[in-house]
Image 1 (cartoon, one colour):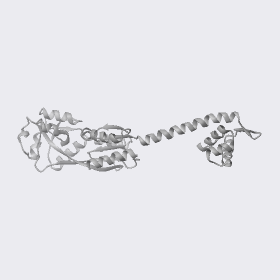
Image 2: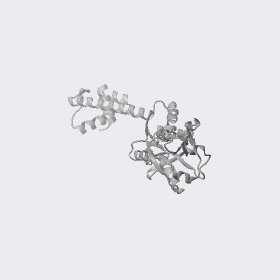
Image 3: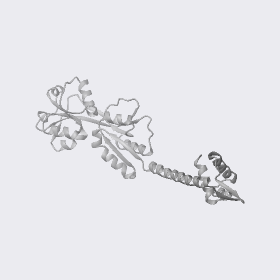
Image 4: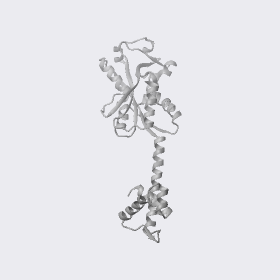
Length: 292
């Protein structure tokens, strides 16, 4: 039986007259009568007694009326909640560490200024984990800097970024305007963990230029790297976005490497089969307008 049948049945119960119920529903009397007959045939019970051209609810009719009212009420609640969710949508977004720290806070703040009823949930991790979360539908979209491995992921370029070599003010490199690539082979590197886009870019460029390197400290956030470098415990290659304040304050030094640059690209990613809600599309469009 359909919701239409139950709505017609409730209307007849309310009016206790087929003609009046038909008028209230903007239907023909024959259509109303047919719907009631279909209900009675389907359940195998009589819902109304027809006595002297008047209708009277049977015991079965009273029981069905209780169910029908409940079904209609639940349907109305579903409609209301689903429309509210469409209007005030929920978005789960994943971001790799650099983006989550230096890009996403301002971006989400700008988005919520115009979409203050939308709920945004953010997950910060390395590119490898963010990709896995998208593949398992644990997040709706991501913004990452690392390379992707799955062909099921759609990737849209967002903005360019560059990693820079940094050292502390007590390090010998701090006094240099540029260094030779071979000088890096004698140094101890403080680096991001495996799966990080920053780590992958660093490794790829070092390998492409046939530069050997030694890692002595591995960590999963930029703050630890910066503090360790400031304390002259090693050098690092990290996003320029992450060290602008420390360089300006004279706590860290950015040192160019002759003929070598660590360039990469931030990108928006989502599953190729993902249904993009209006809110997700608005967030993607904001990203593209602001940074592309």
